Image 1 (tube, rainbow, N blue to C red):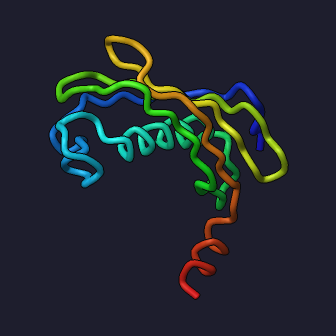
Image 2 (image 1 turned 60 degrees about the horizontal axis):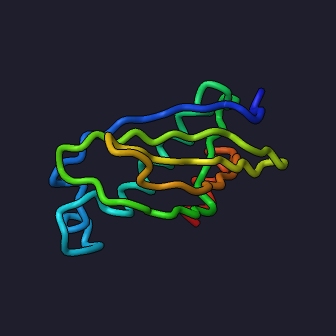
Image 3 (image 1 turned 90 degrees about the vertical axis):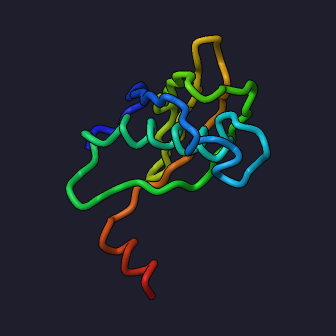
Length: 126
């Protein structure tokens, strides 16, 4: 396993009606929903480290700290970027941001924890 600071990835989304605050029930306007921004940032964190995880291990979300700074309308393209900033034992801290054609729309940190997949699922099903 070589989970070292600096691992990074990005993911892209063209905002659709299914991505809006209305669709998510998190607001009443047809713009990118904050929960969708968070999911996009988490997707980038997973992608940043997926090729470095040992067989049988995965990461799970622990903490999300996101400032959603600007709206993105349906049809806009959003790119979320994640960079592994710190590794503390099993705890991984990422710096994340999301941008659209007009600039920065969200920024923050996501913390994930490295777990044994089978043990984690057993615990979830107890």
